[in-house]
Image 1: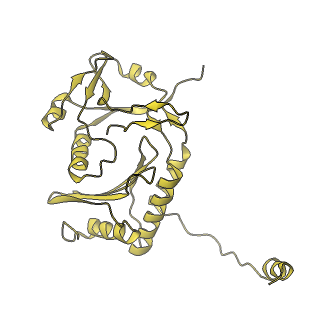
Image 2: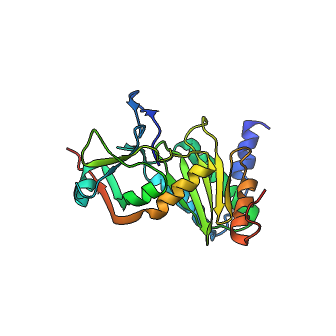
Image 3: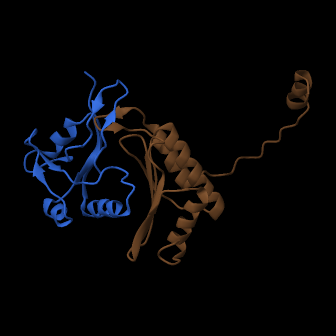
Length: 108
Length: 145
């Protein structure tokens, strides 16, 4: 699910995933590097580009980060729409859990 | 009743019998409580539920358990804004309760089976959730009204 834009507690704007769901490209980054890239992480799930495209969605290279791909038409969180909920289920069914972990970036 | 009389009746003369506590918290409510173990935000937003989302979800699930007279294990997750999504699955059917973090977006119940799906986002009550869960477990007609 794509995150919606929001205003953070400090008043700053978080665009969410307004340009698309951002995912790492497994050909361009190692799993451990994915985990350590985040402030916290509970695991890695994989999606297959072909399966996503078969569901009618687009997968493009993230123009701001060459390690990543964007899925611009992934439904937003809590779409309040039966067709989009079904699409999210279809995406979840194609996903595979690759790593389970509990990572928190050490405080500097 | 005067404060003195209230105190006397309540704390000095009333005998409190506390029965041994043998009740076990229903698993679905326990899983909701587990969501409170985390709070704050990470790179992607909230990691704990908003108070509103938690209260709404807890009351709806508790109410549905009371209506049905039994509990059905669910999986619960927090979205990036602190809303809660609860999913019940049985065979090829599923029911989802979605309680967003704020009042701006509606609570809804989504259900699906191989014969179709549907979504209700008005007048969501514990009785309505119980109705959907009854459909989930009792294999009644695929598209409840």
